[in-house]
Amino acid sequence: SQQGEEDPQALSIQEGENATMNCSYKTSINNLQWYRQNSGRGLVHLILIRSNEREKHSGRLRVTLDTSKKSSSLLITASRAADTASYFCATVNFGNEKLTFGTGTRLTIIP
Amino acid sequence: DAGVTQSPTHLIKTRGQQVTLRCSPISGHKSVSWYQQVLGQGPQFIFQYYEKEERGRGNFPDRFSARQFPNYSSELNVNALLLGDSALYLCASSLASGTANFGPGTRLLVL
Image (cartoon, rainbow over all chains, first blue to last red; front, side, top):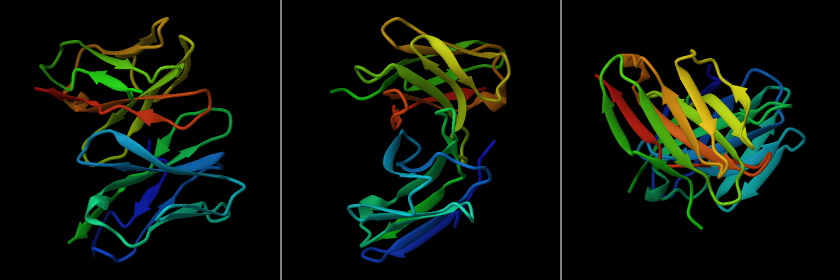
């Protein structure tokens, strides 16, 4: 079963704008990760944030985590056409390593 | 270094048949996990193997089985295929408790 929901399900923005995606989950977690998937192929790991962290940056990516609300957000700044993809959050619980994915956000960057 | 490889890339089977999917992890990675991704949804965890031992199993029927070989490659077997087994099957490898590196997937169509 899916861990939670991602919002929005789909997002279209102009190139250069910022894109924000949200993820909610249901149980206590060890860490939360974000992945990108192009055209239904393999997933690419973007960033990992641990349960004791609140914010993390990697290049144009900024991830926040609010464990009290069981939610996370992914911000992509200065979007590019190559950012067009589906983005998934995935949680890892304490005591195991399995990834529990959300439903994904389909991001389209309009040139 | 080569990434995670999976074979075959595409497969068409008929209901009731059996299928074997193969995965070669990144060199040095001893953990292999399998995920099923139905169109429009996030991946769902099927199995994890570490050092040839099953470490975790998702909510899938006994028709699904897997194994890991001494060279850490892995096979996923699905018996008595159903139409609902049509999906992208993803393999991921990792170092112990590291982030997952996904292969390109095997797209299975059951007719």
